[in-house]
Length: 356
Image (cartoon, rainbow, N blue to C red):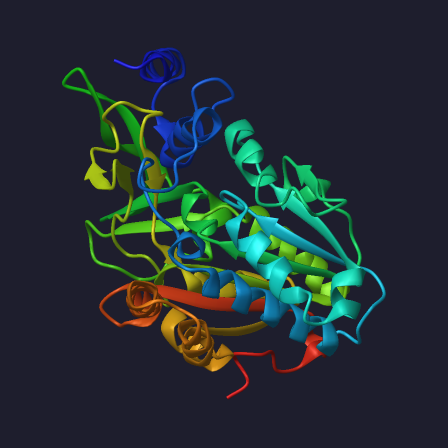
């Protein structure tokens, strides 16, 4: 039993069952035992690999996208480039390298990284060592206001969700308790809180519904409804409401029991891009997409970029570039499972990658 499981059990024994959202928050962000607080989870030696680690092309195209958005914003003299959950800093380093193709954009940038993990902050400093003025923050609320471009790659999936179960008398909160001596799901007798009632669809008994708190995406949408800028969200998920249990744990690149060894595995859920879009529109922001990651990257020119990289590559390097291109864009890999959504200032009009 991990120290975090002992603490979670004490909380349940004292306060009663806890929400799935609180369970995820404790497992991922507990200040002493949380998964993201205690390790670098990325890469072959970690638990999973994200798109920026697959190929430099991903971050370079995101950088080019940000530069094009800056031009749509009217090329302000100062603009914040904010990444939420920046991993090892690979995406930002690649994006900033690509941004040098437009010196005026690079000169306007102030880079801000929202990261809670001390180990990941150290990892991010290595690829960004040559960049000046990079600032780190614990939360999005700590970042400066004003013209801003937000990037969130595989960030939303790790934000805690609430789960509900439909019964004959309505929706009830699905919570984490102790059953048979083990941590497990139980159903609370109280009805669904009113804050979530407007987002609950009609469904048959036994259906599981997942909904996130407003969280960082609401903060982003609220800002962009008032200020110049846009946010690019890339994650794995679907376009509709989540009417199933998608909570999963990943450890050593394999699926694991979400209740086994709390704090030692990554916990995520699939992103409901439909839910994100509805909530962003409620805040007054414009929504673009979602579209499949493969289609988005092709519209930004990933195939041409791969061809240029291969011109100076050795045969083994060219094979790696082809493999990375397929992994990022192929329908049976990340190309369809991952979606891309943009939230923006309504005055910006069509955005790159979404304007077809």
